[in-house]
Amino acid sequence: MNQLIKKPESVFGLATGSTPLGLYKEIILRCKARKCDLSQVITFNLDEYYGLSSDHPQSYHYFMQENLFKHIDIKPENIYIPDGMTDDVQKHCRWYEEQVRAHPIDLQILGIGANGHIGFNEPGSAEDSVTRLVDLSEQTISDNSIYFSSKEEVPKQAITMGIKTIMSAKKIILLASGDNKAKAVKCALEESPSANCPASWLQKHNNIDVIVDEDAGGLLKN
Ligand code: GLP
Image (cartoon, rainbow, N blue to C red; front, side, top):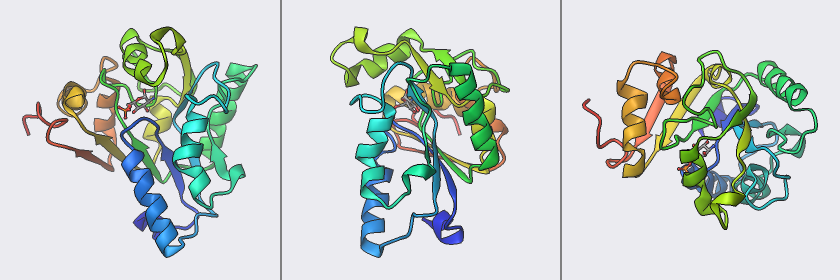
């Protein structure tokens, strides 16, 4: 909210999953109450399943529409989400990366996967990775299968901003809750930065807040 007051034309990087839902609800409530103006805001979503159309109920397009965008006064043309149905993935990823570069992200919201992924940057993701098509890990497919009617229906690939794309944000807020995230939070914050735990690259960012509940922070030494 402060970011919005400071700069009405802020660029926000947004995440999906259960973690940011409370934040989105709060934004909707506050904006309705105070009639805040989001008409100049630009948003970039981290990722999208490859092969899901924007009207598929498990697509991140649909998620964002239902859980945030349809409740606020953001302009549709200011919303950027990778296109899971693109017929030229490489060209689309290059274009997405250029758009982020042209509209530098002021504040990036992040969740974290149980294996330490951010966006869909799975273990093995390099520090200099950019927007690209990735294979999802077995663990991510299994973790995310709760949103689909079966594990077989979970797409095996996704388009995601890279680590470098995420790290280009001026400020980052990483959110995590629940003990299933404790190992990921531990590796993100207390292990040396490496591709084994993609969220650990965030230690190299100079303006990041990490907000975890007791369970997610349960394995932290400090
Ligand atoms: C997905 C998303 C991530 C998200 C993660 C955790 O894999 N690509 O951006 O952070 O899930 O989701 P949840 O918040 O539901 O635990």
